[in-house]
Length: 480
Image 1 (cartoon, rainbow, N blue to C red):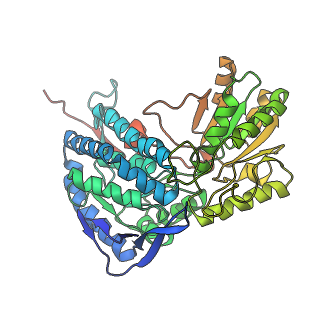
Image 2: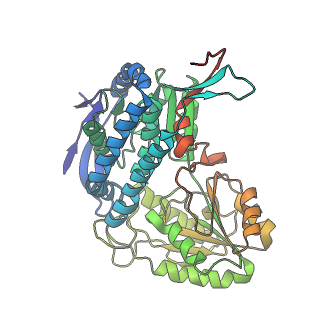
Image 3: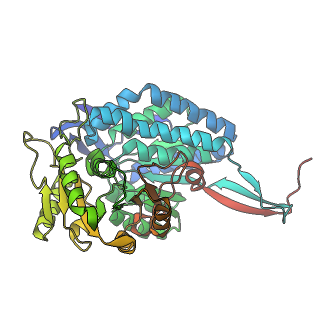
């Protein structure tokens, strides 16, 4: 078993004097694969103090120098990718091939995209031709607290750490205590890249401990959090006392609108997307809204696709989904599947219990419900498991109404061969993102939502600007 009882503070690996031990559980085996220490207020204070000391010098470092550091980080990240994939597979259950290609791959993708966006980034900008002596200067906001989830560890770490580094901020990262191993490995990459002491700091802990201390700390100017809506609300309340900026990327309950003229692969694409990462994605298309004229056919097709999805250990190679991340998540998903049955949804395939052949590990049967209405619990709450709810609709207006009838607003999806109809529907959907006909967002597009999905905009130029404060300067003297 790995002993991971150190924090990365002020450029050194340090062992806290106290701290509660916590076992990191391999969700494929339900056995401990590592032991970490949970930090306390003293650890959080030490990390914030280190970041505060490092901020003046790092924020004044030339942007080109900061870019050089991040480019070295990307090279190390790519070279050590197999180590990262193993850590993610162990800690949260992503199948090893998927962990390498998608989980680790997402981090490399984001770092590369930030590098591209930063090369043309302007920290000093003219206000406009109407004000020749006015400038807008973009200043690093200061010390930032970064709190990341367990479901896509490197996706979220890189979406926060890298733009903060490029912006000139210093930081304290608190990864999820469910999946801390990948972030500790990332700290090794930071160390190998040679970032100055105190620029990046890592403290393990839970939300009630280290998370709360960071959110309320007077020397932290901004909290960037990805996780549940419930936790996002709690963080906002605590952070309000010190008037710090709070950036939240929260849950989702995406609608996938399948019109009768959708392309032949639309249903399969939607089901597999819903089940990707064992359904543990905030942007998963978990509500499939289907035009009534093709409803029966789509339900049968979704059943066939779901029953073809293999479930197996995260340590085995191949195309399958792994377990859920934890016992708590397993119990939550089981309860919600039962709730769907109890409330009258038609169970098409799957259901409660583990898949055949699995008697250990947090494995869930890929589940499809039909005849769901939008007021059922499984249509309202974020399940975070491989559970698809199929809802019929009559016409474009009703599809939009059902899609928007949710507390969330992260990602919605539209499937139709009619381009004008797709555009009309996309423009009226209340979400931060809309993907149509299987086209993913392009590099540099912002990731984030509205309503209970938070208001973050991570990625590309938007992701960098979240860590900056615009300063208006009048009377600027142009340099000859």
